[in-house]
Amino acid sequence: MAHIVIMPRQGNTVESCIIVHWKVQEGDMVAADSPLCDVETDKATFEVPAGAEGRVLKLLGAEGDDVPVLQPIAVIGAPGEDWKAALGTAGPAAVYMPAAAYTPAAGVPEAVSPRARRLAEKEGLPMKGLIGSGPGGRIIARDVEQALQKHPRFTAAARAALSPGAAIPNGPGAGLAGRLTLADLATGPGPAPAPISPPQAPSLEADGKSTETPLKGIRKVIADRMLGSLRESAQCTLHSSASAVRLKAMRERLKAADASLGLEHISINDLILVAVSRVLPRFPFMNAHTIQDPRTGEELIRTFERVHLGVAVDTPRGLMVPVIRNANLLSLRQISAEAKRLAAACQQGGIAPQALSGSTFTVSNLGSLGISSFTPILNAPEVAVLGVCGIELKPLSLGAEVRFEPAIGFSLTFNHQVVDGAPAARFLKALGEAVADIDLWLL
Image 1 (spheres, rainbow, N blue to C red):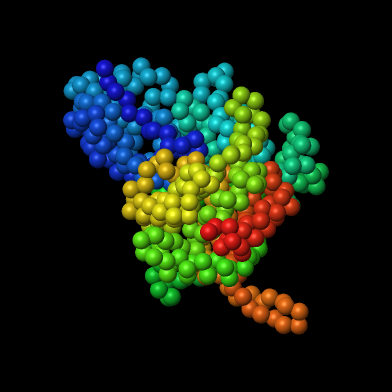
Image 2: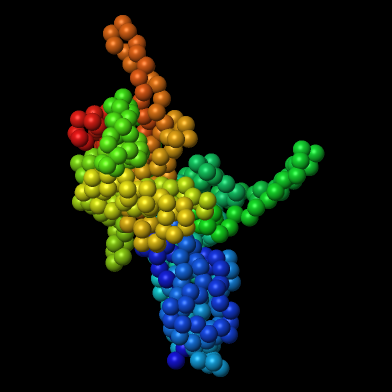
């Protein structure tokens, strides 16, 4: 009997993967452990094995296709076996189709992923009539995002006041980002906007040639994920700084320590990671996820006893966030070694997919690039992310005297839907105090 190879699921938040490269052709003989193709998510690249011995009867996707997880991507069987018949016995989810190519049968309930449901409810998008591209016609976040491009958006008050069948005004509204407001609904649809002739753009050829690169593959996946994060949460960022006098002094002492101790390679970032891992357990609402009950659809906040620390890593393929697990239980030396091991694996393209999921709080450090402050974007479904900035001289008032001392900047982005400003500020204040006195409690 033919074996159907499906796109594996890599983490709870991954809804699709991109086929990067087929390593086999139709007609090739493969073993069970033979790699069929390389696929990638916004987090990692990994191989998909054949899973069974036989001949490659059919490849169901092309290189560059963004395939929903659990969808078939290949069929392996005996020479001459009918691959179409094999797919026909596997149910409605068996044939991979591009987005918007699968329409559920009339009267069949449309399955919706929790992420897609949250996004649709937030934007007031009716679920009826949406076309799902997930397994078995399941509606996933990508389907909702595509529908939102054609669907008018409303403010919360306008959405609540909108009656079924009411006329919707033409064009953008007066609200933020063109959302339709109560005032827009009161004016009615109005005349259709007159077409506007776009202004003629000046030719740039005189200033040299230009290059256009499609936004696709892993870069497109990361872009969609970042946009989805901003759409699905009310993100707010606080900026602060902490004295870096003792932080820098400790770094110098570690560099000068006996080489047998293995402490000379510990960085400022390693010290910050340790401080974060020790402060977070005192603020469990920051070490948390926002989730949705699959049975009731109710929004929940899941807090964690242990700190699984995501560390943003810049790689040639794009941003990756490997996870230091149980960071609050590890020593400074262990955290430093694990951070370097994970970063190297990301840079070399050999990071395991499971090492890129399950973080409960993320740290992104741009300090080495001279950044004074920035606005990190939440790594959904996490509640908060910390941006670490550069160390700069700042004035310190000592009575009539002013002295300049080094200070390190922090930028904390949090989901204001579940965490208020004051509790988030208290966490940031506690972290600053821990960093300022790091030599008193770390050694």
